[in-house]
Length: 313
Image (cartoon, rainbow, N blue to C red):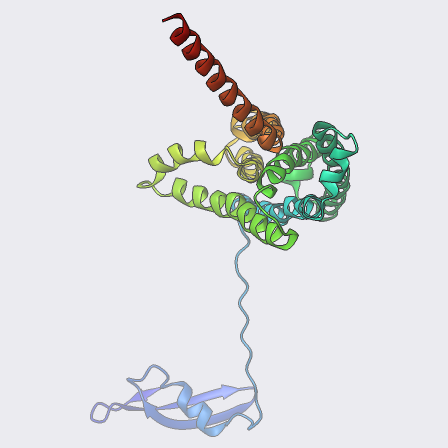
C-alpha cells in the first residue's frame, strides 16, 4: 500500500483466489481497503446474505427463574377455569326454585336439610370427576411444581376438592338472591372471577411494590374469606416454594402454613360456615314467622298484664 500525502489517496493490490486487482481509494474511510476489491469484483446481482445469532446458554439460576415465571403463569391459568365451575352448579338450584320444584319437594315431606345435603353430594360427585380430569391434564403437561411426586399430586388434588367443598355452599347462598338461572350464572361467574383471579393478581402486584405492601398484608385477611382467593393463593404459593427451594436451598413442605396449610384451613372453615349460613337463609321465612309469633305473643302477654293491673286497681 502506498499513500499520497496531498490527496490522502492510496493504491492497493489485493490477491484473492488467484485474482489480482488494483485500485485507488480514500485511506481515511473505514472501508477504504475493501473498496478496490469490490469495484473490480462486483457481487452477483442475485446474491443474498444471511445473518444468524447464537445466544449463550442460560445459567442454571436463570433457567430456574424462567421456569418459576412459567410455573406462576400455569397456576394462574389453572385458577381461571376453576372460577367458572361453581357458577354452573347454581343454575340447576335456581331453576328448581323458580319452577316450584323445590317447594313441591318440601310440601311432599322432604326436609330442607336433606334437600341441600342431596344437592351438595351430587354436585360434589360431579366436581370430583372434573378434578380427576384436571389431574390427568396436569400429568400430561408434567409441571414439576405440581406433579413432581405422588404425594405432591395428591395434595394438589385435595386442595382442589377442598376448594369445591367451600365454593359450592357459598354459591348456594348467593343463588338465593336470583330468580332466573341465566342471571345467577352470569353474576356468579363475575363474582368468582373477581374474588379469585382479580384479587389474587392484585395481591401479588401489591406485595411486589414496597409502597403498597403494608396495605396488601392487611387486605389479604379480608380476601381469605373468599374460597376462590384461597385456592389461587395456594396454587401460587406451591409453585413459588418449589422453585425457591431449588434456587436458595431453603426447602418448604407443601403443608406448611405459608404454602398450602393456611389456604386449606380457611377453605375447610368456610365450607362449614357457608353450609350453616345456607340452612339459616333457607329458613329465613320460617324464622320470620317465628319472630312474628313471638312478638305477637309478647304483645298479648303485655296486654293481659295491663288488663290485670287495671282490674286490680
